[in-house]
Length: 152
Image (cartoon, rainbow, N blue to C red; front, side, top):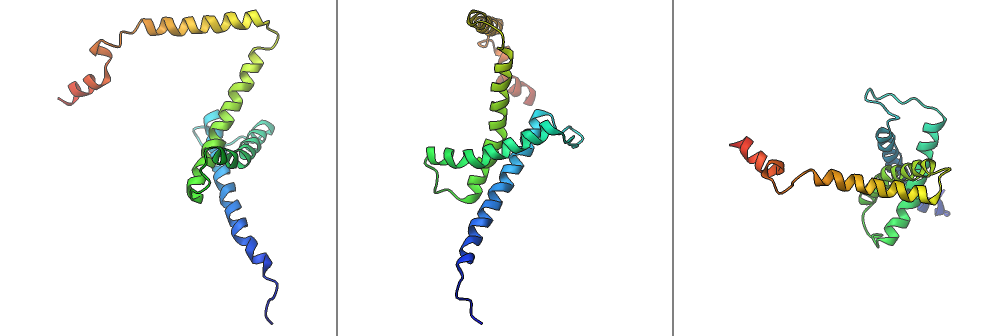
């Protein structure tokens, strides 16, 4: 009995491509959880509501953000494996950027605009002061010259 309706066979490559994208997104979310400290050095994952939310958000960000980033960068022609690298990077560092923005907003709650400006000014002065104490023209701080001495 011949199969006349083989339209469902055209879905198989699309499903396989989506499974590959999902694999890379979950891999990147796992790396993001390692960076955030939710997966410890012993490799244990204490699954709770926050960790599940981070994992879900990281995968969602990767699945939705990567095609937009590739379209913006005009990289639609790259292979699926190269796209997988983008899925991993966006899942990992996207969650990191969202976490930084969230913590920054939490720190600024209840402060006036002038207090925020004063804190930013103090942070820039602290960075500038820290850089003034190191004389980078001194060969003592040049790592290349230290490596040469160690090899000799």
